[in-house]
Amino acid sequence: MFGAFRPSPISSVGLLWKTPWKLSPTRKANARARLKRVDSVIEAVRASGVQCAALTQALELPKEHEMPPKDKYTVFTPHARGYRKGIHKVPKWTRLTLRTNPRGF
Image (cartoon, rainbow, N blue to C red; front, top):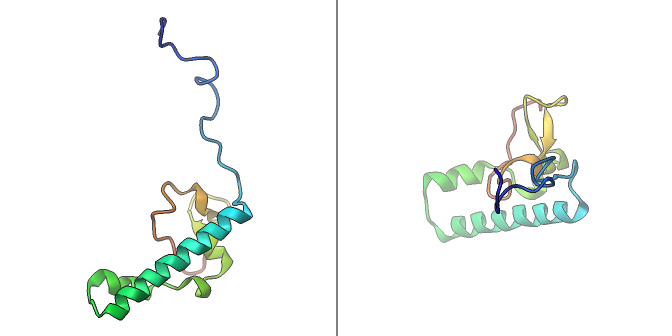
Protein backbone atom coordinates (compact mmCIF):
# COMPACT_ATOMS: atom_id res chain seq x y z
CA MET A 1 0.00 0.00 0.00
CA PHE A 2 2.73 2.45 0.91
CA GLY A 3 6.14 2.41 -0.64
CA ALA A 4 7.73 2.57 -4.06
CA PHE A 5 4.89 0.83 -5.89
CA ARG A 6 1.83 2.49 -4.36
CA PRO A 7 -0.95 3.42 -6.84
CA SER A 8 -1.10 6.99 -7.98
CA PRO A 9 -4.31 8.92 -7.22
CA ILE A 10 -5.18 9.15 -10.92
CA SER A 11 -4.96 5.41 -11.62
CA SER A 12 -7.04 4.44 -8.59
CA VAL A 13 -10.07 6.62 -9.40
CA GLY A 14 -12.42 6.74 -12.39
CA LEU A 15 -12.80 4.72 -15.54
CA LEU A 16 -9.67 3.13 -16.91
CA TRP A 17 -11.04 2.43 -20.41
CA LYS A 18 -13.31 5.02 -21.94
CA THR A 19 -15.43 3.61 -24.77
CA PRO A 20 -17.27 6.07 -27.03
CA TRP A 21 -21.05 5.64 -27.07
CA LYS A 22 -21.18 5.26 -30.85
CA LEU A 23 -18.86 4.02 -33.57
CA SER A 24 -16.95 6.61 -35.57
CA PRO A 25 -17.25 6.53 -39.39
CA THR A 26 -13.71 5.13 -39.59
CA ARG A 27 -14.47 2.26 -37.21
CA LYS A 28 -17.69 1.53 -39.13
CA ALA A 29 -15.72 1.36 -42.38
CA ASN A 30 -13.19 -0.95 -40.77
CA ALA A 31 -16.00 -3.20 -39.50
CA ARG A 32 -17.53 -3.37 -43.00
CA ALA A 33 -14.13 -4.17 -44.52
CA ARG A 34 -13.61 -6.90 -41.91
CA LEU A 35 -17.00 -8.44 -42.77
CA LYS A 36 -16.13 -8.35 -46.49
CA ARG A 37 -12.77 -10.03 -45.86
CA VAL A 38 -14.46 -12.80 -43.88
CA ASP A 39 -16.98 -13.24 -46.70
CA SER A 40 -14.17 -13.59 -49.23
CA VAL A 41 -12.40 -16.21 -47.10
CA ILE A 42 -15.63 -18.21 -46.72
CA GLU A 43 -16.17 -18.03 -50.48
CA ALA A 44 -12.57 -19.14 -51.18
CA VAL A 45 -12.93 -22.15 -48.87
CA ARG A 46 -16.25 -23.04 -50.51
CA ALA A 47 -14.70 -22.77 -53.98
CA SER A 48 -11.82 -25.06 -52.95
CA GLY A 49 -14.23 -27.95 -52.47
CA VAL A 50 -13.56 -28.56 -48.79
CA GLN A 51 -16.61 -29.70 -46.83
CA CYS A 52 -16.96 -29.45 -43.07
CA ALA A 53 -19.55 -28.51 -40.47
CA ALA A 54 -17.97 -25.12 -39.80
CA LEU A 55 -18.19 -24.25 -43.50
CA THR A 56 -21.87 -25.16 -43.71
CA GLN A 57 -22.57 -22.99 -40.66
CA ALA A 58 -20.59 -20.12 -42.19
CA LEU A 59 -22.49 -20.38 -45.48
CA GLU A 60 -25.79 -19.97 -43.59
CA LEU A 61 -24.70 -16.58 -42.22
CA PRO A 62 -25.77 -13.45 -44.12
CA LYS A 63 -23.14 -11.73 -46.23
CA GLU A 64 -22.09 -8.14 -45.56
CA HIS A 65 -24.17 -6.68 -48.39
CA GLU A 66 -27.26 -8.62 -47.19
CA MET A 67 -27.09 -7.27 -43.64
CA PRO A 68 -29.00 -4.13 -42.64
CA PRO A 69 -26.93 -1.42 -40.92
CA LYS A 70 -28.69 -2.18 -37.64
CA ASP A 71 -27.17 -5.67 -37.65
CA LYS A 72 -23.73 -4.51 -38.80
CA TYR A 73 -23.19 -2.03 -35.99
CA THR A 74 -25.36 -3.26 -33.09
CA VAL A 75 -26.06 -6.55 -31.31
CA PHE A 76 -28.98 -7.85 -29.28
CA THR A 77 -28.78 -7.53 -25.52
CA PRO A 78 -31.63 -8.15 -23.09
CA HIS A 79 -30.27 -5.54 -20.67
CA ALA A 80 -30.40 -2.40 -22.83
CA ARG A 81 -33.50 -0.23 -23.15
CA GLY A 82 -34.02 -0.87 -26.87
CA TYR A 83 -32.58 -4.40 -26.67
CA ARG A 84 -29.58 -3.28 -28.72
CA LYS A 85 -26.08 -2.11 -27.89
CA GLY A 86 -23.19 -0.96 -30.03
CA ILE A 87 -21.09 -3.77 -31.41
CA HIS A 88 -17.94 -2.09 -30.06
CA LYS A 89 -19.20 -2.62 -26.50
CA VAL A 90 -18.88 -6.42 -26.90
CA PRO A 91 -15.55 -7.78 -25.58
CA LYS A 92 -13.31 -8.98 -28.43
CA TRP A 93 -15.94 -7.94 -31.00
CA THR A 94 -13.43 -7.99 -33.85
CA ARG A 95 -12.84 -11.72 -33.37
CA LEU A 96 -16.45 -12.88 -32.94
CA THR A 97 -19.13 -13.70 -35.51
CA LEU A 98 -21.96 -11.38 -34.54
CA ARG A 99 -24.04 -11.52 -37.72
CA THR A 100 -27.25 -13.09 -36.41
CA ASN A 101 -29.71 -11.78 -33.85
CA PRO A 102 -33.02 -13.11 -32.47
CA ARG A 103 -36.04 -12.60 -34.71
CA GLY A 104 -37.88 -9.37 -34.13
CA PHE A 105 -34.86 -7.60 -32.67
